[in-house]
Image 1 (cartoon, rainbow, N blue to C red):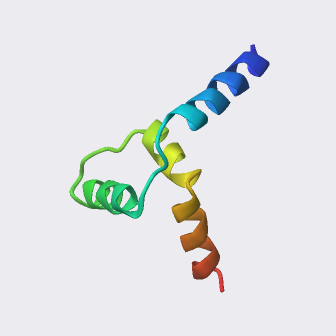
Image 2 (image 1 turned 90 degrees about the horizontal axis):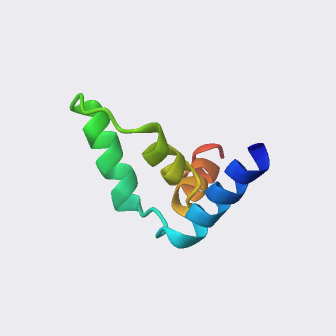
Length: 60
């Protein structure tokens, strides 16, 4: 079952569009305004190149 779950996640990552900086900012604004952003949406943002770039800059 775990292997199937990993394959589905990998397929979703290939099929869905890459999260953008706008997606990140929108999710952050929603959280600030009390709107709950789903864990799936946060996971999608965390896996994006934009988020990884921001994290790498932030850690310097």
